[in-house]
Image 1 (tube, rainbow, N blue to C red):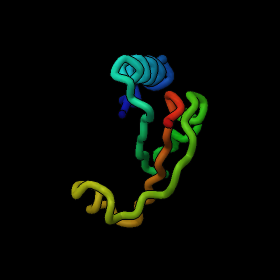
Image 2 (image 1 turned 135 degrees about the horizontal axis):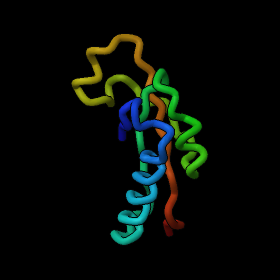
Image 3 (image 1 turned 30 degrees about the vertical axis):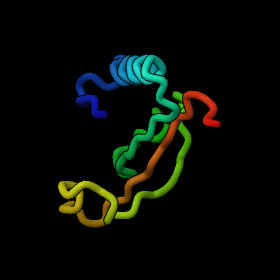
Image 4 (image 1 turned 30 degrees about the horizontal axis):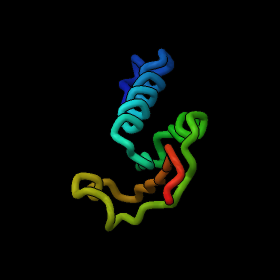
Length: 85
């Protein structure tokens, strides 16, 4: 998910997360996982919305287009929507 800088702080990202959570609940999805570049600083945004830091993602696990960026650090966050049995 990415919100252009001009729209940041206007509630767009929050509205997207609410819609994503609603759709996932309708589909009975148990967990939402997102990867974010450490350098972009969205960590508090996700934490405020219930996401928890999961792990650093190794470079080898990233899509090919990200591998052109050297020294990148990717963090993964997850949000449990319901208890998994």
